[in-house]
Image: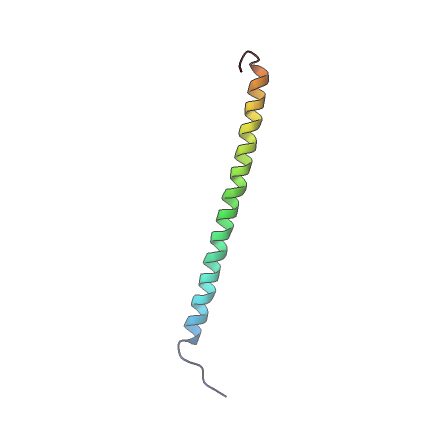
Length: 58
């Protein structure tokens, strides 16, 4: 059996950690994007309700 390089385990561990950090970053960016969409929807709903409450505006 061929012996592995002594740094093989470290390289594999670092690769897994980089992948985990990348997936966490994708999750955070996606959740911020989704919450921005919810915030925009809530803002537009509030603006529509305000427009019905104050008919004298624009």
